[in-house]
Length: 284
Image (tube, rainbow, N blue to C red; front, side):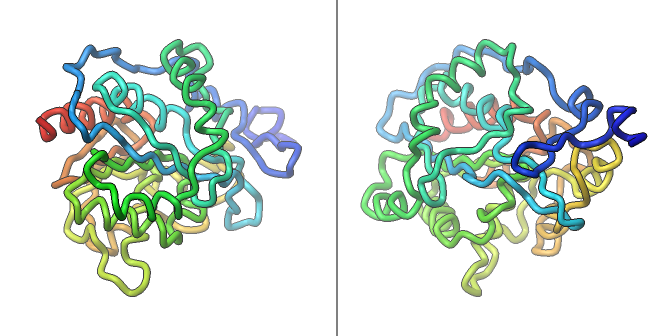
């Protein structure tokens, strides 16, 4: 009751899940973003397509059994996509089974004109994405039109995605064909799929920027999460031979070979700029 009075209690949703508390939303969510509307020299080649793999899952079970109302973080998805769009790239939207993309709408920057514009433009694709299995089949015969794979963050990226063999197939395909892989925050959980089926982890020895487990452990205190995480992403990656480039949920971004990563929602703009500039330079 005291937490509720102080605005620290997570909000109970109609489906029994919990979204962040009033205090957590004030601290972690802004109605606008720091997106820089850069006029890039647009890419005009044949490899203009970026496959974006979204989660279709909404509720993440915490250690205490409570459900966190999550999905894809809108800023982590849409701000990098704005940069890539400005650089001349287009998007192929997919989810594991073709169900609609789920966003953390409580984190949506409602007063950001650019984010609203691209969201509404892509809404039909978000509502009717491709089934990832179909994309796997299609990419087996079509590599030349793709530039990169992008997997946005949000805690929802840790539900189902890390165990999805089709995600692993796509990441191995991207790696084998010298495509870039772009991801941030909790999105690097997708990289764990490359070790499914007793395979060696594809990114052993890589440097990465990832959302720190230490921050996830703190957020239940302000009601951002309704409990502690079921498992820790950054420590899992570290145990597989990854070198973590950040200790805070900041704007750190990192490129190692053809993998581009970012630390948190605060890195969305920097990740977008790095991804856009890198693809333009490498695809000349």
